[in-house]
Length: 498
Image (cartoon, rainbow, N blue to C red; front, side, top):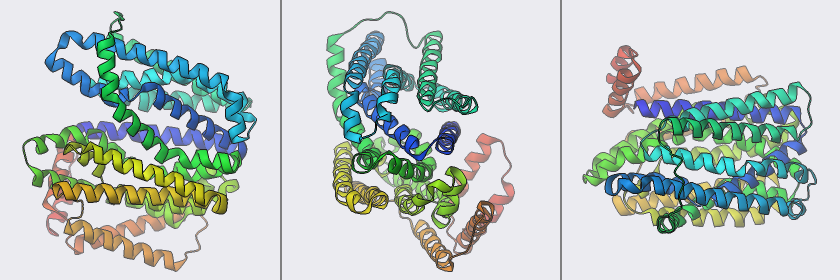
């Protein structure tokens, strides 16, 4: 539980400062420039995924394996992985620099030619940072991910963005800020790992180990590419069919909607290693019960933010990004539905991996990614921004339905306990009532107040409908023990409604 709390704090800090940087860029530069910013980051993200070859997902498992079976090969494994990523990232960086003009022609925006050569210089450093963090995870450490990737990097980048704006520098300096922050993060990370003796300077390339690592990583590499396709196809295809200004509008809504996955992502980081032991011991009932309780908590914790975003999308957009981005308010509502549904089904994909059905996980992601491309191809030329949002939301709906169906078919595990179903029904009815009232709210703080009242009523109805489980009390006991807070009064109240 303590590890989950640390990871959650790191995710919150990372998302908060990253979101704040986006807001500052969107407010202080044109919508077109904000669109170029998102296009450039998307292209870089694709390149990082390709350059790392799936190693960030495979190395933790491989390091654990060699620590148990053949510790003498760990340094060679790490060294080989780093050398391969250095070579692949440098080659890809050179390719992107040489192909800049062709990329610019695809997206029809001349500003990309100015900023792309700057940001792709980040590629080797960003790729190596991801691999270094996966190596630390293989040694059972989360410190490097939380401190360096989730805290130090976003804070440094935010400070540099503020400096660019304060000094009234050209838009391209935002990309210099991004590059500098990535390089600095990489340098202090590698110094820390050398100091902790996780790495050594004995660089060597073992082709046999490298071949085994690449072969094992290939399915994870494709899974990473497909996950990326799910997340960023809309941005790329809007850039292709429309222009960077439309991309800027869309990503203002997208960056807010993605905040709805904060609790899901925090728990997922530690879920697989924690729950796998139950499956290994044949305790499917216990595993399923943990899944149900955590899914109910994820939904309930996400609901307040969803209420604010979905019911008051115009106010939320205007508050964070300014009145210029109001056109994206309907997009925010549509995307919020998709990400809320994603959160409400919980960690179905992780459970498929735990029960040894990773191929079904890959198949579901493949189908959803293909569907996303097809829907974007059909809907964007006709409906523009809203078409891209519908495509993404429908893809997440289909993905989670497939994952949940396959999980139940293969293990009889599902997230829908009777108490969770009651909480879903209560939330749907309350949301429907509030939406039908068409409240004339024009102030963010009034909107927050309405959302708080909504959530308060929701939790009261949970109590009176006896939607509290004994496991909820057990979870509070764990929180109380690890955080050192006194929750006696809350526990007494909840016990009366079980």
